[in-house]
Length: 316
Image (cartoon, rainbow, N blue to C red; front, side):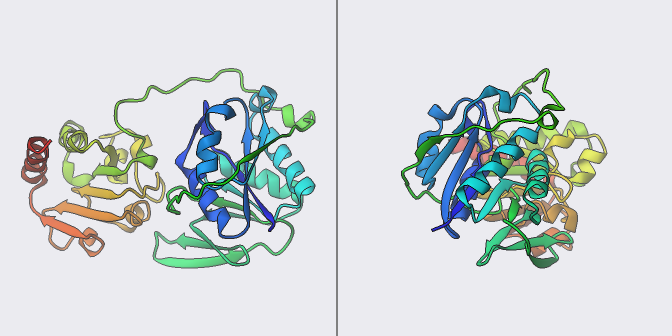
């Protein structure tokens, strides 16, 4: 069975959920082989094994993490050639897409980005025009390099050996052209990360202003949820842009998504329509969001949301 290389997305040794999704996807098409770059593997090997990594190629040399993107592409290219990998899967994040592009050039291969699923023969599925159309594409030359959109695949545990193999790569001067001189850790609040949260509560234009987002935050905190916002809300300056859910923001796929005061434009739906259960609160019964939901509440969010928060708090 041919190996499928999966680039591990991690921060200080903590494996991101998207990596578990990629390992799950890789199992459908071959033998998952995780590629770990940088320090911290020891604390994460059990998680990689739990989700099906048959092998783990570990490049622990800190030099590989000292430069921007290029060393990772160089290592992956070497592994593809040495191990005759059938494909390479990376997360379709900003960094992941750049790695995918650089890797494809090194391999003389095609690259697929923003893929939401992969069928037999490494045919990539793309959700385009805000989810209105599904397109399929296939790499016709070289080893397929596929960047998969986070939250597209449900991670499934399937314990494997995760046999470790140390690897290294000689970096060229070009690989060292952009050096990381400083890293600043963004302070995290008590709420879960938006893209990995099991529950997300998002506010939209109907919230009416930045001061009213306390209602959204109150409901989210009662549920232990992350807070999101529509593009209309972030463009208006009511909530920070890093919390935008939608086609030009972040894609989420929680167990429960609550849309408060969001009309449901295609742009927003593209970022949350794969959520397992969707609840909407909107005073307009004709709002497009109601076409998508499992449960819809037609009512004033300023009355409904606080009542929900109060009732949830009572039941704790």
